[in-house]
Image (cartoon, rainbow, N blue to C red):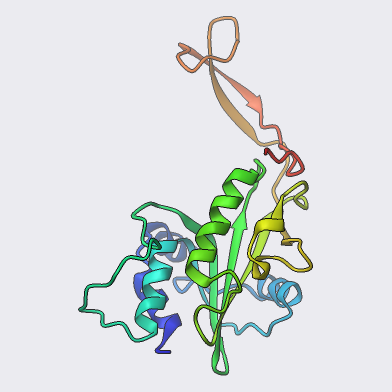
Amino acid sequence: MTGLVELLASFNRKERFFLVGTALGNPRFCPSDAFRHQLVTLFDLSIPKDAFVAMDYHLDWMHAALTLAFGASEDGVHVNDGNITGNQEDVDLLVAFDAGEMTHLLLLEAKAETGWTNKQMHSKARRFAGIFGEDGHRYPLVTPHLALVSPRPPQHIESERWPAWMTRAGKPLWLELPVPGGLRRVERCDATGHASAEGSYFRVLRKRQRSVEEVEP
């Protein structure tokens, strides 16, 4: 395997990555010690301070980086086995690092207000399985890991059909995401205040923190 972490970084073309990194004085998106220690505890891994971190990382990029890392020519034409979709499907936060000969990929899926739907997560599970294999061993010396990040632990998620590497003892790993209360939202409505997608009025509501327990089928 050739430089997977470096290849992952070379595909990272998100404007928000560069903008946020520059605005916060952290252009390399290095994780804070506190967050890194949370990941160490969650995944039971030693995570270096200079781990590669990217937001909204496209799964097409991930598959392409893996393809090149395992010997495909960058100048060649490659058979698309269905893992290059041309859509914007991504992982909310990617943390990648080398540990000896092994490269670990931490895939973090986040929700702040809404809950995950089983339809959405089954789709993501199929995509991850296509890239890494059902057992997570499609690529030697590459180990993927998954965690869900939200204000409260997810409930009623049907993870039994997910690849085993996406869970621990059949359940997804979970990391708490602090979110302030009392957030507001706007809603279009009619003159009487009834919600309307074509409404000529709007109103401001206290943003209801939808419980992550409210998972749709």
